[in-house]
Image (cartoon, rainbow, N blue to C red; front, side):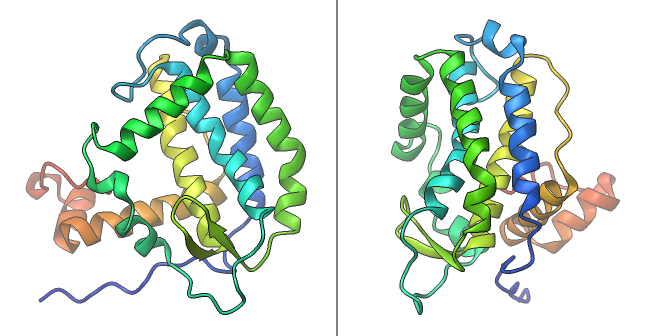
Length: 223
């Protein structure tokens, strides 16, 4: 029987300045003329326009400002770790037409209808408040869409994962190179993806994919 993996947490171990650096990269990508020119075209994410994807990407650092500025959970509230957060996520268990995924696409499309300037403005406003939000962040936050409390650094890593993955999606959608994000943003995301992939497919699948492609399985997707 496989040895269970320990809970995954980044509490008090994240370089929070990487959140600001990643947000600047996202803002530069969303502001590219190639993105606005393809705003209503289909993106690399099935069923989502380029504009909807750009909004969804821009929303991730905005959520950081909103959640860090909201009332903190009770001092002794149990904290959900990163692996548990994804294990409980409805959108991972659903297919593309599941209610959670349809809801994300619908809300993003409605917001994108206001145009590229609106999404650019959202990121400008987010960057204006991000440093202060990070400096004032409590020990833990309440994630409103799950109702669970998380260590602040664990929550931030979940938003970094969204930014890293969807920055690649957006760049791919408009034939741009995937932008380089700060190592402090990418390294914890790669750790999460590796952890989730091992939990889903087992150790051998990941070891073979990274070192022995001739014996690797076809799919080691983390999500």
